[in-house]
Length: 216
Image (cartoon, rainbow, N blue to C red; front, side):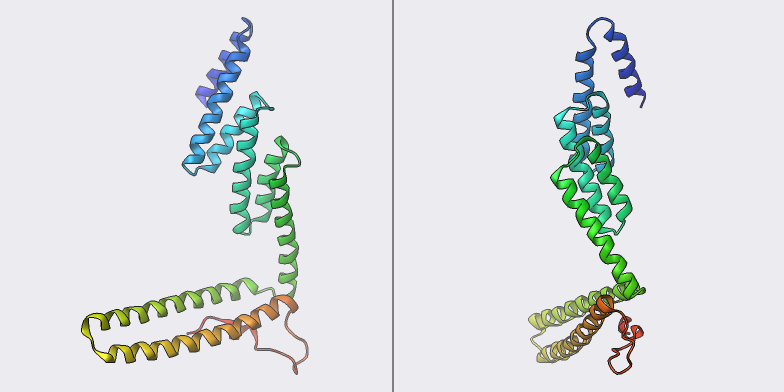
């Protein structure tokens, strides 16, 4: 910030000598370079600040505008995938101030808005969807671990040449297949719950939400 303050002071001083435009151009170029370097290092927040500082000096600068739109879209995408919809929209609003109507920004904004509508429907149908979904993800992660165990058992056969290892792998595979079938049924129930909610009629009721918890 101190360097920026000095640059602003130099700009004001040299303006009286007719050199303000040259200094302004240097500031914009420097800020754009800082933004580019920050992006190369994956630092979206610093890149956004640098491009915005460049645009304060030259709101029409094409490099800064394109850089800001790109980085704000990246920030918004990260927030979107984290279900932070309000923050994602705010990130897009920053880009919109300098590039109104940008196709990339508007497309992502539309995605966020549609997701908000769908989320409200899901919450209305099945308020505990998040906990159930997290449980299912844990269960499928466990399946991956079981598959790794089978691979490990098969590897042991490669150096022991003991067919009992193959028998063990077969038993593990049967168990894995059984778990996959059970989890697939739970996925089907989960989809029905988030789409339609818990049925009121006991005749058509599916398994209660508790049955969707992770397998022991």
